[in-house]
Length: 297
Image 1 (cartoon, rainbow, N blue to C red):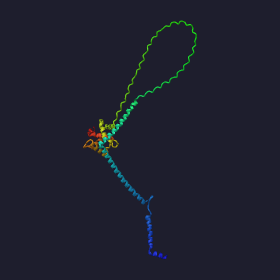
Image 2: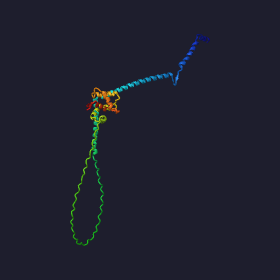
Image 3: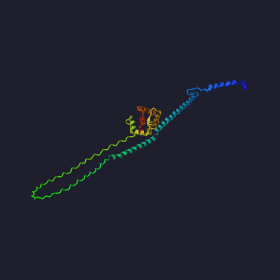
Image 4: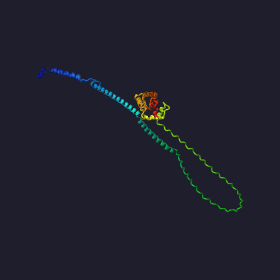
């Protein structure tokens, strides 16, 4: 045993043991203890912050992508409205198709009303009178027995005076006067209201002498653009909308070669007091200002 201890001390192992102990203590102080902030360690907090930064970056990327998609959608809607405004023949066919459906439904309704009027005008038949109940015949009384007395001797009866009766003249029966009832007057048929009456009323706010035929032709030209509320209105604050009207209507339909944008801005000034500018009224004022009303006559 003494030999072993002597060999250990002789080889200089004590400095190594002391160094190992000191290293363990320093390692425990540096790496063993972790600083806590609240319920999280400093390392966990750093990881959470890194994840939050990555999520914020991802959110920013997604917002940028949604902005691009919104821009593409707005461009597509503007192209669709321009195509709708430019396609005059297709719009006329659609408008004629819907007008025919409306007229067919109106004819069915009027036929139904006509078939109902004879039934309402027919007089009610008087109820048949019930025959009066016959009263039971009274029972006949038995004839009383006659008492026969002996007749006394008859005296000569005095002569009866014959008095001539005057013939009573019969009165002729009075003739019944039949009063004829005056025929009932038929109510005047209601006038059919034009489906484009509301557009004509809007146009006549700016031109009291506006022609109904011109307004009908403008409605046919607009076609399916009048079905939805957004496409039936013209937004003067949108430059794309104004360019669409200038190129699609003023150039292609009215045949203008210059001054289209100035014309559109002038009409916007005329309708400045109206918040929602109807497309039919806007096109009418464009045609009137450009002196191209013959296009729709």
